[in-house]
Structure formats: structure tokens, C-alpha cells
Length: 100
Image (cartoon, rainbow, N blue to C red; front, side):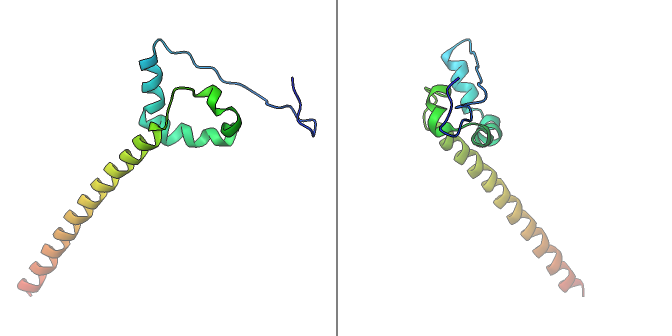
């Protein structure tokens, strides 16, 4: 095993994932659970700048697009819920004013 100048191993582990097809690989790396949970955590355990190209070749830059899209959808839903809540509160306050 190669060593760094300080004597520590150049790496302390490896991961290997097999897929039945390129489509399965693409589906795995573009799945929202992977993008939102696993991908951010990879940087904690792996030097993705040095080794990421080997581990994730072919993944492309679409994962950020998928993640941003998912966040946008959630923000849109939250905005709709907030609007409904504000209208319900307004109706309740107006009812209290009218009824005294």
C-alpha cells in the first residue's frame, strides 16, 4: 500500500458497487435518497476530489440538478401550505371580529 509523506496510508478503504446495466447505475446515482443523504456524506469518508472520478465515472453533473429540483418542489409545497394556513387564520380572525 502506498503511503503519504507523513507515513499514513494513502487510503484506508474502498467501495465497489456492481450494476446490471448502465440504466440501473444512472438510476441509483440520480435517486433522490442517494442525492440527499448519501452523496453529501461521501465527502466525510472519501477524498472525492482525488478519487471521485474513479468511483463515480459517468454520473455527470445531473445530481445537483435533481437535488435542486427536489428542494424546489418541497419549497413550493411548503409555500402552498403556508398560504392555506394564513387564509385559514385570516378567516378565523374575521369571524371573531364579526361575531364580537
